[in-house]
Length: 606
Image: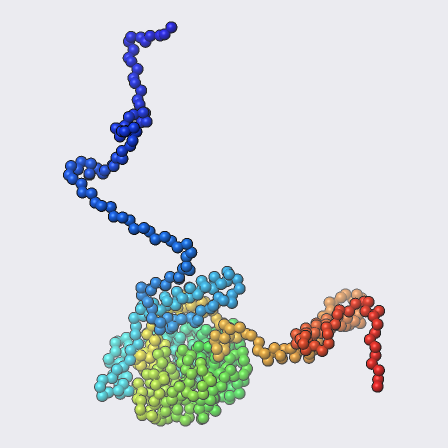
């Protein structure tokens, strides 16, 4: 029985056909398919004619070779702004360290990484020369004139106001005077033979202190900061601060004639009338070295800024170089056949300038002491009594009241020669007792018997300064920070040698040292044993028992020492004996059963 649908209901809708059941228009000729090309929207409504282009045949791609050759290293790309080789050599920190001898891979990579950093630092330092806008200039004379004809009044009238204010004279009554500039060239210290001491800022003319020590003064010297200075008085050396207050009296430095200061070692060097050279470490207040040089009264003394060696001139024309940890001179140089009158060292530590009673001024290369000939020679009319070299290589010398300046240290000439005239001439009003070039300024300070003169010498000072090294405009906070940094980077006095790069080498013993060390093994004495017994209560032990215990300990130590020496001698003999040189065969190790072996027959006497 089937059910019929009710009349009022609508008919069921036909189901939708699926996509695979619908007949497509493209199905023709038994299911063949025709490719339909889909065109873009712009071309679908296009009613014009199409022009068909012939397809160009594609070129076959080259097949890759199966075995690749070794890839060549790509050439380094040239830098956009190359740096000249001269600048790179100027700021170079030496040859690169080869990682060939480094054992582990970690330290090899660390060393190569460090070399990359050093190379980058060298390039950056060379590029910063573009920022150094100040240039060193010199006087240029017109046709028919020479710079030696120009007077200080003419130079001061033709420069700017700030530079002309640096030319001044001080007339004082307590001379003759000694003078010193600070390392940054900002402050000036004057000391008169009759006890007058004055410290002031010579640029702004602001006085720090002025007093009379009430005894004779031989020399003055600034210390590591411009707030402290040393004064060599009649008997001892005194330290004073910026306000003139006495800080310390060093009685171990007595009868001192000359003072000098090593800023990177914090050493105050002194030479006295008895021929003693002394080095005082101002950071700890101890004498690092103090011994007799055997040169007599020390009047000529300068230190080499490159290695810290002290150069002392003697009355026999010989310059000797000293270190605080060596009691013998590191080197001696015969400079003149007569007594020396003046001595100076280049600020770069490359040249030594000497003057003698033979009226000659000679320039020597300190780095090559093997050559006994000077680099250049100045012949004068009178012996020079004072010498100094500027940062730019200018030479200043005085002959009594007459003063000359030469633009090039290695130029040669002299007033006695007549071929080459000096750069600047000046006649002072009194005998010259000291002269120094001011660092980073075109100024020459002259201390005379009647006061002080500040002379303008264009082109003598370094125009650009490094503020982290010497800052003429430093504040009190910067000065304190610089003092702390310099104390942390202080160089110990043991490193003062002729060759400052000697510390980078390896101290390998020579053949003679090895032979001497081996010979000493055959003549070594037993060490002395000092035994201190413990104090015991009364009745616990006596003196006889303590002496017996001491003797037992000494005998045991002596036996141990003798056994060690015997072993060392045996090892030494084994090293020098070879198999070919040995007379007999090598003996087998002895055994307990060797006593049962037959004895070798004795040789019969004939």
